[in-house]
Image 1 (cartoon, rainbow, N blue to C red):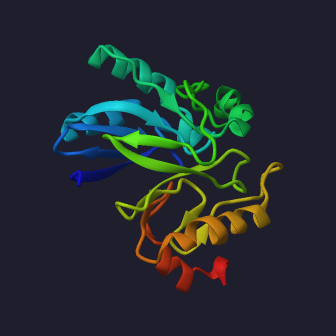
Image 2: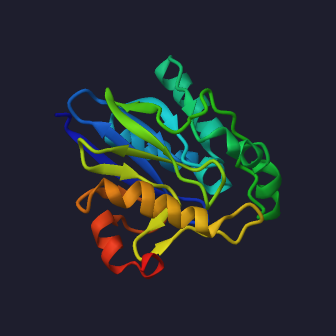
Amino acid sequence: MPKFQAAQVAVTPFQQNCALIWDADSGKGVVVDPGGDVPRILAALDRAKFTVERILLTHGHLDHAGGAAALKAELEARQGASVPIEGPDRRDEFLLSSIETQAAKFGAEDLRNATPDRWLAEGETVEIAGTPFQVLHCPGHTPGHVVFVSTALGFAVVGDVLFRGSVGRTDFPYGDHAALIDSITRKLLPLGDGLRFLCGHGPGSTFGEESRSNPFLR
């Protein structure tokens, strides 16, 4: 079994959790949702000392994807090899292609549009240090939001679908609260009470704890 480690780097004024996930034995891993503050992410990678194989995006919001293009360029220059951006589902393309426009409204000049090297779809897998993670399409917060799950490791990265004691916002023109709750109750919670997750903002939790205590799921 791989010796997985994880670290979170809070980025952008939205305090979004950029996640670093790697196998300490192989020295390989991924960066999930590099929303911005790329120098801060690179400093964390220097401390973690692993080779980034890919950048994963859960969805297209600027605070999750705004630093992906710059991080990709920096890593490829450092590592001398391709570092593909994978995800989210193609239904978030309209968000990824308008990051710079949205960022200008917040006065954030260092965020860039992102173009994935690979769009992801329900039922596919992505690899983290050779371990397959299942891709689940969990819309509601955004139309193309995806979640990465390894039942073998009992671990998931859920982006802005589910939080400790809360759920993702759906008050956007494209948001769908019913779809979000359905994604959580039909796809995530049945994976098991003990499954731990990292989320896009705040501390992580387990599916069992959220099933019992999250007021949005009662």
